[in-house]
Image 1 (cartoon, rainbow, N blue to C red):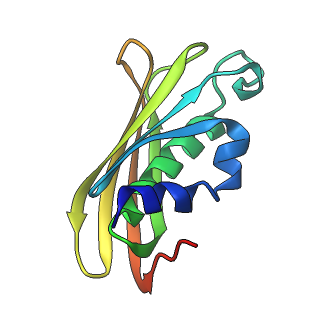
Image 2: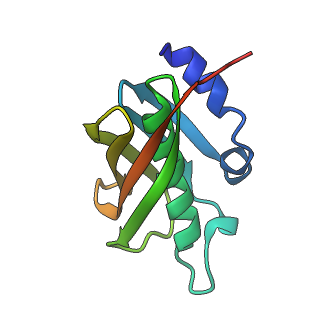
Length: 135
């Protein structure tokens, strides 16, 4: 599917917009997004909230999974937090591992400004028959 159409489609993700997640690039079966860490992303101990990191990874996974132009939804995901982050920018990079007619698998690495892995997200997606429609 055309990159501009996917970018336009995901502008409708209101939670990503609210959190300040920026879609940087859409690849065939991949995506890159980033989040500039703000005070409201921090938890009670002053590190980025796991939910904010998860949402960044999940959004990037969704873009990658839907990049083929078919409506694709998560059926199973997991995340491992490797390192705390407190400032700077987090960048999530999604890569397609496996693509079948009904199922697809993705890995998303979330890294800090130094390139250290903050979290590793794995997702399995169900590929519906519906095509993505963009007005």
